[in-house]
Image (cartoon, rainbow, N blue to C red):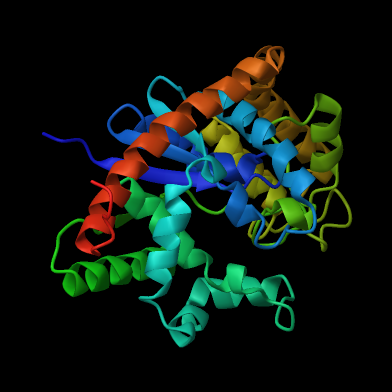
Length: 334
């Protein structure tokens, strides 16, 4: 049987953090064992709101590849590629733009939310508004059948499949393939400040590459229970970020439940609790940090991995584009 094709990726605007790990990286390591997986470094998409700082995007391409390798994404099993090195994606985007009205693009809930979050209402670019169309090109170029996403990204897959159906109907073909969203089972990891989401741009993230000192400092700043003023006071577990992290990363689940009970009845200080979390996260991150440092010793090889993956990705996208051009009567040279 033909394997399902997975298409996923990240915007290289900074190194990856624990939120990325629980939300996508761990599942990618698992999925590469069963599927044909493509992981894209979406540098062009990153420029839609970083166009004034392209150096930031360029520098972080290598950082994100290092994070991929450090967590166990295997370039022998997963094709890691750079979006801008696959020009066929952008030709497909142009063709798809004709199939999407401006009103439909602006109605996309994910786009609307991100415009609001980034305060872009007055200065939103056409590139940003149309990036779901670009994502459709990314997915369909590889005939992706499975796309891992969070709940907030479901409108992107819906719009991709609308484009697929419209294209196939207009040109009476089955060249393009609809994709199925694979919802992540992991709970969203909150930021250390108590915000609902950990984010690179929010300054509330613990990075996979953080040193022991940085990790310790960030955990000690973590939001707990503001009403837990004295050690003897009963504390709230719900909404306490330290417990949210312990629930995910502490392998001793019974111990976590004991800590919760102790905290609720009082007598357990936040500092003691945070030191426990530091130990847990240090044990988790130390091997990742070590592997990352080993790969970072040969950055030229790290970039070769991305470049070789990009060549493979371009060949596959070129085949899809040739099929698209044929049904659109644009195959002048055969």
